[in-house]
Length: 166
Image (cartoon, rainbow, N blue to C red; front, side, top):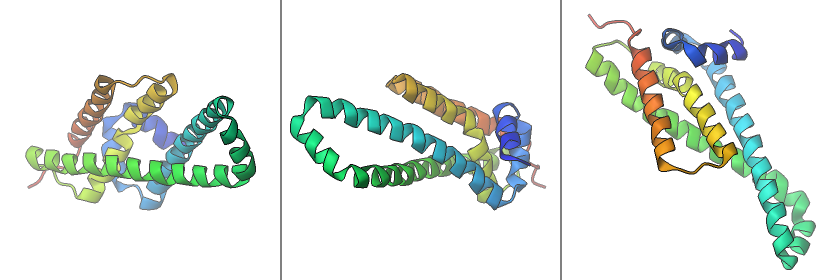
């Protein structure tokens, strides 16, 4: 399956999200790192725009940034990439841990690595909503709560399609 097919299926089909638990880890890592790369580019654009806004208001900062600009931008992109990777992996791991309890409660068969993959694909819509919220610069705890609840609901829907324990 191509990354676009995985993306498209993870937008609307909890049944396929449950089936994605069997996808090889290499394809899963391609999917997550392509998403992280896109998120890092968006973060970097906001970082660069934030620096240019700050440069206009501080004269000494403008001279300092002009001297280290060749060093600042690559390291800032690398830092944003690592930070986004950390946050996304932690977020998915927490949802996978919650999903493993859901599997236990529903008496479904699945390992942590399976539910981790399902949590990754179930987090596609909430992550897209997070990007939209970040682009529109809404900062509200209720919106973040709705995004987390949406992730939880999608994971619950996807665990319905896991095999039953005997």
